Image (tube, rainbow, N blue to C red):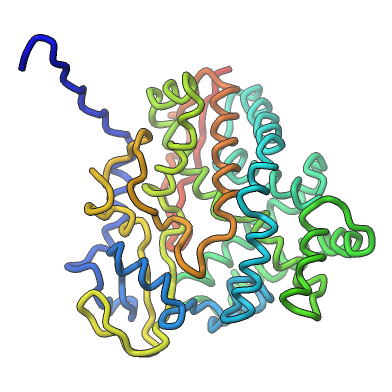
Length: 404
């Protein structure tokens, strides 16, 4: 090496790498596709095999329509549809909430996130999972739907019910599901009724007196999918605007920043790097951890033969660690250029319709928290954060001390 040559300094390890890595133990097998007798299902961890399963809807499809409580939970939601109905509903979602829509809401998303951040910083301490990561996407969703995000009573009513609904959602989608007679499902149905009593009057009002908001747009577009489109279809469609994958993603991103003061400082100095941080968070954290499918017919994949009716778990965060597609895939690198399409939002016909909105919500929430603080970190005197969840994997609580 000559005097003029420079040696690149080794990248500092992100503090969350090890603790996130150990959460994958239960899914690791001796090959990329293997049978789990414990779960009575195929476990798929390879990228190529995962992408194929998600893309080939004629061979593999969602099992949620077959589950007890699926209809009661989702109604005529996109996740319950297939074939022509699914294609048309997916197209409607992308027309209404695609990339242009996401950019149009960015400024308002930033304002709402700054308002919440400023309030929490003024307190000095906050539980950033519930008070920030769960709250900000909810408020942004309320705003673009046409609900009054400034109405404290609306948040006070809906947010607690959303948490109850989320417990049922996790139980419904995990393992073999859950009985409608279980306490979790009964509580979840009661929560849905409470929220419907608040939201349906607004939905009815937009049918008679449309505005420039998403609820009104859903009323206009819905009949192109179902001629008998009704208020309950609108209600089913808007759930994902109020409770979605942005929440567990944002929990993970905020927690990562709590653990990494150097990364905080880097993003404050150059906020243009936040999008890269969010994209790496999607790849590395992949909060939508397990995507469920079943085989519609006998098929060979990954050197294994799946039989018609077999259940499948696609483990997306492990697929997103494919060494042939990402350099040092087990490292969290906020500077990474994504070499491949990660599967955090799924893939193929079921590609998440909220992927553009989710990215904007997460990026603006991160920017706002960084802008309103000089630093923030975990409160050592409060409960320790823990990672949990089979379908939606996230961390909580995140008790933090915030410095203005």
